[in-house]
Image: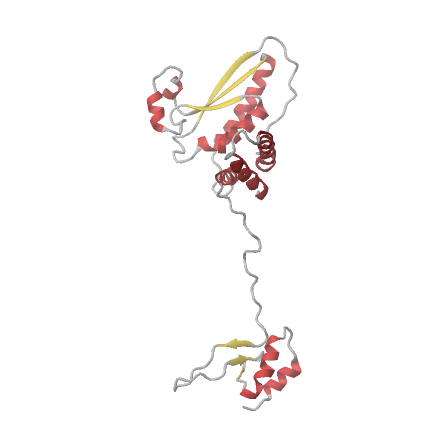
Length: 258
């Protein structure tokens, strides 16, 4: 993840000098694509059938798969199908050999532009309900096989996954954070190691009724408090700095007369 974040940062920095480092820009772009595919490759469980040899003239076929917005009005089906920068849809296109487009009412991010285009030539699809349009260009004996494979995958994506179990959504959110530059890796060392208590734990000092503070109390393993005197301060300090319990030293402390 950190490597991809660095690549995206370098790409942004190169954008300050357009057409200056063309070969570097191309190499960085290719590496971003390679790493992104390795990290965010979605497993659609597509059944890859052996396509027959092309027979006949190529044809164009298409099919609509309608989005169940009425059943799930708050679910972001468009974002789930397209993915960040359209990467999820592009992967499906590569794997199925079909063109995948989101069409119908609500398919455009800019609602004002959608309303302006409604009723215009080439925008007739905006009069239809929200749907996924799948097209395939191939010979008849191959096109229908590829189209059916794409339809099956789109139908799977249109089934909302339970909250917290959607692996595709998790990958999309991480990729979106990387693109926006807001990704922050979780540091496994960020949490502090819990401190272990020594055999003698320092307890808060006891305040005398007249306002003075007496010597601090040390709790012994047996539970009885031990209050060191002035002549025992160096011994107690040595004891507290030692990671291991010295029983003989402990007994000396216990027998000190105060």
